[in-house]
Image (cartoon, rainbow, N blue to C red; front, side):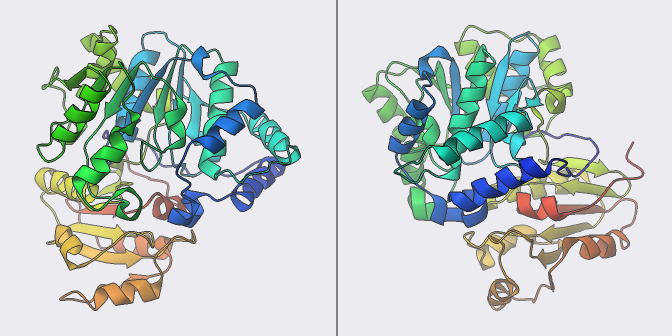
Length: 420
């Protein structure tokens, strides 16, 4: 995901009616954002039923479908921004949201209206469904309805947890894109990289090109086999632009997006690429991946949540900054955090912190983790006083990283004063 430097401004609900409908959505149906794996409903039948309820024809839109363990949100946002800068009307569906549910559904950066969300909820509430769709399934169908009403030229879809049985997999895309594969959500996707790659590769469709963001020897044979079975041309993302001033992993995401569009005969000039990156937040709402919100001392907000993503973030920080690194780390209950995981925080002043979402690891969870470590990490229950305490310790060359979960970031109430 890309390095974005902008102010951090929490969203505040202004419409009670809208807020009540969102609360109802979370309460009425399982939602991974609140319940984690308990909300996971593999299979496509519910999605098809919801699409029928709203009389939605998937074939009226053109899709770019993106799956992967890390980087898929970045690839989606860069792809959408590149298309937007070429004067296309672009629908973008991503998850999770940070402050406002509507962040998940945008057209050229503009969020879906509160009124449309309310109207959609009312239809669902009055439909007397004979099945229990998940929050994600409902949200996806709302997105398709919105993009259809907006007559989007292209729709960029980020899968949820997996691929093969993900609600988004009902579409027949112009192209499928798979970013890197790592160990994440093993209890649902499989215990090995090959198992997970097989699930992610479920988005590959018959005779539809697929772009692989990075060739990983452990899993590439899986992609080759599935692509061959489906007669889907397979391509490795080209390193078209190596001179962009981006970290390596961010450059991979940009090149993956450019390669995917190139396979669709949509070429991106250097001017378009630069504008798409400069206007990434405006065009897509993209944020919270290595987001620098203050300089000297540097404060970075980062939504990495698994070991691979966190290791990349910390390696990038260590390579760029010379001062001490302080890290406030939160994590959800289902995420396995053990001594091997904690090795990525070597030479870091680390603090554990719970967050307000019910999926947060509890103090007891963190205490259990502490028993497996060579040192005991102090545990905090509120990020805001902890943030202020750590911030007061920083010297101008130091870095404070807040990471591990979108939910931890959403609890933070901070407005930078000296960001340049």
